[in-house]
Image (cartoon, rainbow, N blue to C red; front, side, top):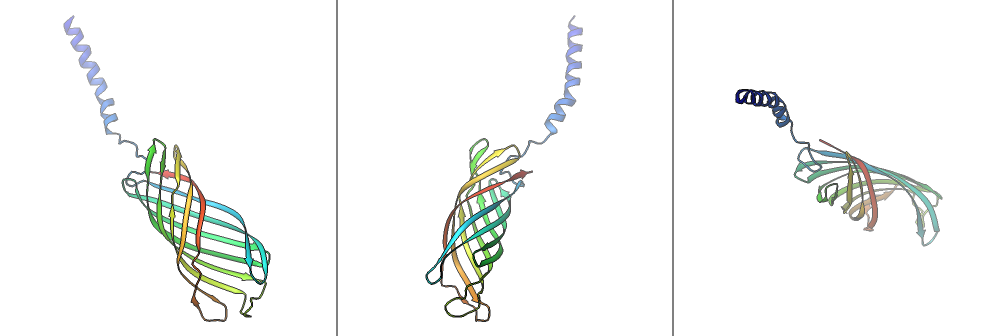
Length: 208
Protein backbone atom coordinates (compact mmCIF):
# COMPACT_ATOMS: atom_id res chain seq x y z
CA UNK A 1 0.00 0.00 0.00
CA UNK A 2 2.79 2.42 0.91
CA UNK A 3 4.61 1.57 -2.30
CA UNK A 4 1.46 2.38 -4.29
CA UNK A 5 1.05 5.76 -2.58
CA UNK A 6 4.75 6.60 -3.09
CA UNK A 7 4.51 5.68 -6.78
CA UNK A 8 1.43 7.91 -7.24
CA UNK A 9 3.21 10.85 -5.56
CA UNK A 10 6.26 10.46 -7.80
CA UNK A 11 4.11 10.28 -10.95
CA UNK A 12 2.14 13.38 -9.94
CA UNK A 13 5.33 15.32 -9.17
CA UNK A 14 6.93 14.39 -12.47
CA UNK A 15 3.76 15.26 -14.39
CA UNK A 16 3.36 18.65 -12.70
CA UNK A 17 7.01 19.69 -13.01
CA UNK A 18 6.94 20.68 -16.74
CA UNK A 19 3.82 22.77 -16.17
CA UNK A 20 5.44 24.47 -13.19
CA UNK A 21 8.58 25.16 -15.22
CA UNK A 22 6.55 26.72 -18.02
CA UNK A 23 4.69 28.91 -15.52
CA UNK A 24 7.92 30.11 -13.95
CA UNK A 25 9.50 30.76 -17.36
CA UNK A 26 6.75 33.18 -18.42
CA UNK A 27 7.77 36.78 -17.75
CA UNK A 28 5.38 38.90 -15.73
CA UNK A 29 3.18 41.14 -17.86
CA UNK A 30 4.47 44.71 -17.99
CA UNK A 31 2.45 47.44 -16.31
CA UNK A 32 1.79 50.98 -17.47
CA UNK A 33 4.87 53.02 -16.56
CA UNK A 34 7.35 50.13 -16.57
CA UNK A 35 10.71 50.75 -18.25
CA UNK A 36 10.48 50.09 -21.98
CA UNK A 37 6.72 50.54 -22.25
CA UNK A 38 5.28 53.37 -24.29
CA UNK A 39 1.99 55.03 -25.10
CA UNK A 40 0.63 56.44 -28.34
CA UNK A 41 -2.18 58.97 -28.29
CA UNK A 42 -3.33 62.40 -29.25
CA UNK A 43 -6.25 64.77 -29.52
CA UNK A 44 -8.48 66.31 -32.15
CA UNK A 45 -10.09 69.61 -31.21
CA UNK A 46 -12.48 72.09 -32.80
CA UNK A 47 -13.00 75.54 -31.27
CA UNK A 48 -14.75 78.78 -32.15
CA UNK A 49 -12.93 81.97 -31.16
CA UNK A 50 -13.61 85.69 -31.32
CA UNK A 51 -10.90 88.22 -32.15
CA UNK A 52 -11.39 91.80 -30.98
CA UNK A 53 -9.52 94.62 -32.77
CA UNK A 54 -9.65 98.20 -31.51
CA UNK A 55 -9.99 99.63 -35.03
CA UNK A 56 -11.83 96.96 -37.02
CA UNK A 57 -14.17 95.51 -34.42
CA UNK A 58 -14.63 91.82 -33.76
CA UNK A 59 -14.53 88.78 -36.01
CA UNK A 60 -15.15 85.11 -35.40
CA UNK A 61 -13.18 82.17 -36.71
CA UNK A 62 -12.93 78.43 -36.21
CA UNK A 63 -9.74 76.57 -35.24
CA UNK A 64 -9.25 72.85 -35.85
CA UNK A 65 -6.17 71.20 -34.32
CA UNK A 66 -4.54 67.77 -34.32
CA UNK A 67 -1.85 66.75 -31.82
CA UNK A 68 -0.38 63.20 -31.93
CA UNK A 69 2.04 62.27 -29.14
CA UNK A 70 4.19 59.46 -27.73
CA UNK A 71 5.51 58.80 -24.21
CA UNK A 72 8.41 56.37 -23.76
CA UNK A 73 9.28 55.27 -20.21
CA UNK A 74 13.04 55.40 -19.65
CA UNK A 75 12.78 54.81 -15.87
CA UNK A 76 9.94 53.55 -13.65
CA UNK A 77 7.01 55.93 -14.32
CA UNK A 78 9.36 58.54 -15.88
CA UNK A 79 8.75 59.17 -19.58
CA UNK A 80 10.23 61.17 -22.42
CA UNK A 81 7.38 63.00 -24.13
CA UNK A 82 7.34 63.91 -27.86
CA UNK A 83 4.44 65.71 -29.49
CA UNK A 84 3.54 66.98 -32.93
CA UNK A 85 0.83 69.52 -33.63
CA UNK A 86 -0.94 71.15 -36.54
CA UNK A 87 -3.86 73.55 -36.72
CA UNK A 88 -5.95 75.41 -39.25
CA UNK A 89 -7.99 78.59 -38.85
CA UNK A 90 -10.75 80.09 -40.95
CA UNK A 91 -13.50 82.64 -40.51
CA UNK A 92 -14.55 86.20 -41.19
CA UNK A 93 -11.71 87.55 -43.31
CA UNK A 94 -9.08 85.40 -41.59
CA UNK A 95 -7.33 82.20 -42.59
CA UNK A 96 -4.21 80.54 -41.33
CA UNK A 97 -2.31 77.41 -40.42
CA UNK A 98 0.48 76.38 -38.09
CA UNK A 99 2.56 73.44 -36.92
CA UNK A 100 5.46 72.54 -34.66
CA UNK A 101 6.98 69.90 -32.35
CA UNK A 102 7.08 69.67 -28.58
CA UNK A 103 9.57 67.87 -26.32
CA UNK A 104 9.45 67.27 -22.58
CA UNK A 105 9.23 64.81 -19.70
CA UNK A 106 6.37 63.34 -17.71
CA UNK A 107 5.93 61.34 -14.52
CA UNK A 108 3.05 58.93 -13.97
CA UNK A 109 1.96 58.74 -10.32
CA UNK A 110 -0.50 55.85 -9.77
CA UNK A 111 -3.48 56.64 -7.55
CA UNK A 112 -5.30 53.34 -8.06
CA UNK A 113 -4.88 50.14 -10.08
CA UNK A 114 -6.05 51.71 -13.35
CA UNK A 115 -5.99 55.39 -12.48
CA UNK A 116 -3.27 57.96 -11.97
CA UNK A 117 -2.01 61.48 -12.53
CA UNK A 118 0.50 62.11 -15.33
CA UNK A 119 2.00 65.66 -15.09
CA UNK A 120 4.17 66.81 -17.99
CA UNK A 121 6.52 69.73 -18.60
CA UNK A 122 7.54 70.56 -22.15
CA UNK A 123 8.94 73.12 -24.56
CA UNK A 124 6.87 73.74 -27.69
CA UNK A 125 7.89 75.42 -30.94
CA UNK A 126 5.03 76.96 -32.95
CA UNK A 127 5.12 78.27 -36.51
CA UNK A 128 2.04 80.17 -37.62
CA UNK A 129 1.09 81.99 -40.80
CA UNK A 130 -2.17 83.88 -41.11
CA UNK A 131 -3.80 86.11 -43.67
CA UNK A 132 -6.36 88.79 -43.01
CA UNK A 133 -8.58 90.30 -45.68
CA UNK A 134 -8.56 93.61 -43.74
CA UNK A 135 -5.49 95.86 -44.15
CA UNK A 136 -3.96 97.01 -40.90
CA UNK A 137 -3.61 100.67 -39.97
CA UNK A 138 0.06 100.93 -40.99
CA UNK A 139 -0.67 99.73 -44.50
CA UNK A 140 1.55 96.68 -44.18
CA UNK A 141 0.77 93.46 -46.01
CA UNK A 142 -1.95 91.36 -44.40
CA UNK A 143 0.15 88.17 -44.40
CA UNK A 144 1.71 87.62 -40.99
CA UNK A 145 4.25 84.96 -39.97
CA UNK A 146 5.36 84.14 -36.42
CA UNK A 147 7.87 81.80 -34.78
CA UNK A 148 7.30 81.28 -31.06
CA UNK A 149 8.58 79.08 -28.25
CA UNK A 150 6.27 78.19 -25.36
CA UNK A 151 6.77 76.46 -22.05
CA UNK A 152 3.79 74.26 -21.22
CA UNK A 153 2.70 72.38 -18.09
CA UNK A 154 -0.04 69.75 -18.16
CA UNK A 155 -1.72 68.01 -15.23
CA UNK A 156 -3.95 65.28 -16.70
CA UNK A 157 -5.75 62.53 -14.83
CA UNK A 158 -5.35 59.25 -16.74
CA UNK A 159 -7.79 56.33 -16.58
CA UNK A 160 -6.85 53.02 -18.24
CA UNK A 161 -9.21 50.44 -19.72
CA UNK A 162 -7.07 47.45 -20.62
CA UNK A 163 -4.60 48.70 -23.23
CA UNK A 164 -6.51 51.94 -23.80
CA UNK A 165 -6.35 55.17 -21.81
CA UNK A 166 -8.22 58.46 -21.52
CA UNK A 167 -6.66 61.60 -20.02
CA UNK A 168 -8.21 64.91 -19.09
CA UNK A 169 -6.88 67.92 -17.19
CA UNK A 170 -5.71 71.55 -17.25
CA UNK A 171 -2.84 72.91 -19.33
CA UNK A 172 -0.89 76.12 -18.83
CA UNK A 173 1.13 77.56 -21.71
CA UNK A 174 3.43 80.61 -21.55
CA UNK A 175 5.13 82.15 -24.57
CA UNK A 176 8.78 82.89 -23.74
CA UNK A 177 10.11 83.84 -27.17
CA UNK A 178 8.57 85.17 -30.35
CA UNK A 179 9.54 86.64 -33.69
CA UNK A 180 7.15 87.85 -36.35
CA UNK A 181 6.93 89.87 -39.50
CA UNK A 182 4.52 91.15 -42.08
CA UNK A 183 5.52 90.11 -45.57
CA UNK A 184 7.65 92.80 -47.13
CA UNK A 185 8.91 94.13 -43.80
CA UNK A 186 11.87 93.27 -41.60
CA UNK A 187 11.40 90.55 -39.03
CA UNK A 188 11.16 91.79 -35.46
CA UNK A 189 10.82 90.41 -31.96
CA UNK A 190 7.21 89.92 -30.99
CA UNK A 191 6.36 92.15 -28.06
CA UNK A 192 3.31 90.12 -27.02
CA UNK A 193 3.85 87.32 -24.53
CA UNK A 194 0.72 85.24 -24.61
CA UNK A 195 -0.33 83.20 -21.60
CA UNK A 196 -2.90 80.47 -22.24
CA UNK A 197 -4.86 78.37 -19.76
CA UNK A 198 -6.98 75.61 -21.25
CA UNK A 199 -8.49 72.20 -20.61
CA UNK A 200 -7.11 69.35 -22.69
CA UNK A 201 -8.15 65.74 -23.33
CA UNK A 202 -6.14 62.81 -24.64
CA UNK A 203 -7.00 59.28 -25.85
CA UNK A 204 -4.72 56.45 -26.94
CA UNK A 205 -3.21 53.11 -26.09
CA UNK A 206 -0.14 51.77 -24.31
CA UNK A 207 2.13 48.88 -25.26
CA UNK A 208 5.01 46.78 -23.94
